[in-house]
Length: 239
Ligand SMILES: [Zn+2]
Ligand SMILES: [Zn+2]
Image (tube, rainbow, N blue to C red; front, side):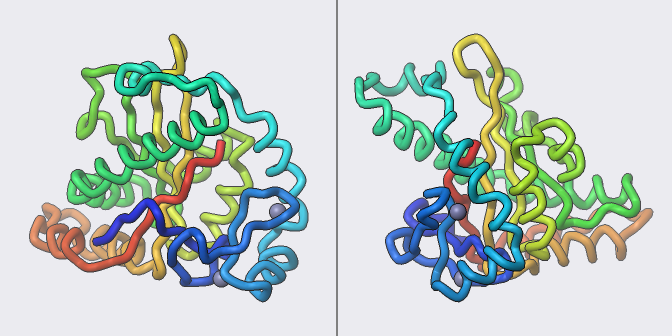
């Protein structure tokens, strides 16, 4: 598995392209979504619902809180006056933590997802979200990792509904990871979409959940999935 922060993915979720961030063109309306080509941008505008989300994404971008100075961040870095730089640094920092913990605990996450599917019939693997909880030291991963659904997320954080609908349309190519951190004295959460060129992992998780029902999960099968060379990247946070 490769996770590289400089890589990005096309925001047309039916497109498989993952490549360096600098090779994408950004939507000039919302300044948020990235496309590999004019064709993908047009498709997402017409078929992917971006026509109706472009304006709200711009508003979201403008209203981004300036209180991003997380306790864990301020402990590690000295703050600079330039808030723009601080924001992108904060994001890169948080994204690196999520990437790292996802890679480190991927086996456990897959196991938890299979178990979640078995316990909740009717839910598809591509509907699952992963929550990384860093709110207190005692809940650091792996015990702070939990599984949820897109439906829960849409209900609790309505502002993310565009990402929820993208993830639903992506056929497993986009899965939502949520990071819970402290922002001053309060908890806050950040969304990091995990993009992969194919939805294979979600399908395999579903297959394991269906095939092994009632029996103990085969840890060897989980290990195989962890070691499979799938290109996966966490996109920058969009709150
Ligand atoms: Zn846009
Ligand atoms: Zn594309």
